[in-house]
Image (tube, rainbow, N blue to C red; front, side):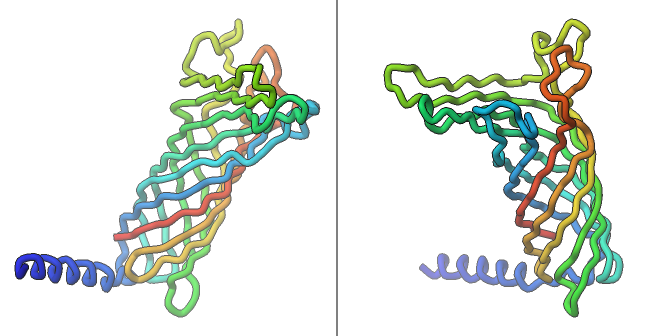
Length: 236
């Protein structure tokens, strides 16, 4: 019993010490972040197909970063993130199916560079802007159709490594989608003196997601990644 109380006391003191630490005077910070993304890139923007509609595709983001913080007011951060980006379309046929969709998950490695401007008396809030480059190491395609008629067999077709298969190329060796992207970000964060915080940002890609050189054009409009991200963070 005494041993348990002793261990509990040591653990409580350790947690209290960690929570009481102050990172506001530190210039070199290592951070961890994890969050939820809402991806709005449309496979067919202003689609001419009556039975399809662009919808938000959910995804996840997590990574590590390093921030150099000048005396309280400015920070420069570089990082490496995993990001599940992509696109989703809802397939609409009120007479035939229920919840049905076509989805592409872009499992990407992302390299962001961010400038942070700290504001307020305590300098725990910052506004930030920056840029990023990303590359999709794997693209997963999924088509799901739930039929209203029980006599029909529901469809749930999944294809992994969509960009890595030779049969996804046309006769000239071009793929339908581009794996790489680059763009800008803007957002804000709250970072407490103990290092815990939350943030939100918007990303806008500048590279057309569809490959116009592919022999069968998917769309005659340029399509870009646009993502809204909410995340938690921790700095040490």
